[in-house]
Image (cartoon, rainbow, N blue to C red; front, top):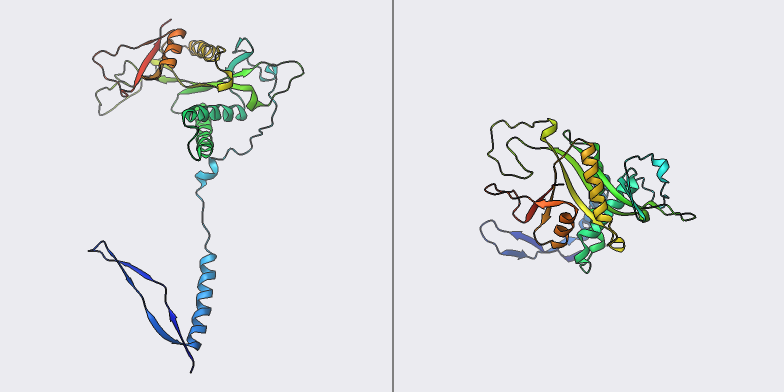
Length: 288
């Protein structure tokens, strides 16, 4: 009977009591007819392994912006039927209506978030992932959660005769305006209050406030008054909703943003003995 000598692959065994790895080599003499049978069985096992399907979680598909038309032309303002809007210079501030406008707002935020890290490896992939997640988050917020009203405000280029622009080239600025309720015991957003066993939210009109977040402007369109006018539009929108108090958080190291908000009518809130949840930011309130 003919035989053949083969070497098995290295087997790694990790002991429970020791951290070292023991390697063992095995050498056996196997009859040729057994080797043939084993090779057939190994082929079968390989086929079985290859037939295993990998299931992808449904959350991954939800992050992909399906159905967006990136070549969609910006509709004319009369087509939107927007009465609440603010025209200034070559731009218009209003509430976003199209999914493509939500996507462009999300992309502007991704650009702003990674602006100082443009030389990092895979930065484009990070920005794309950030934009996809923010796009879905904007749509969820604008649908309303727990009785809170949220709107995505955008600044778009005005129409010009004989010039057609796509939506993604028309949106140059964005911010979020949400109408919220103070928690029981709060006198300003983010205040540390004594936790109670039962906490309630007072939904009276006087207990509501507006909150601004995610303000950013395209790099190519800055220094044209876009941020200031979007803020003015947000303030007026909050007042139309019956809200007088308006707040925003600004990082302590962001002196440019602090100057912008103070120029628009915001002032730093003196918290006094009260403590804020975030020590790295200033809380500003609109006072005009």
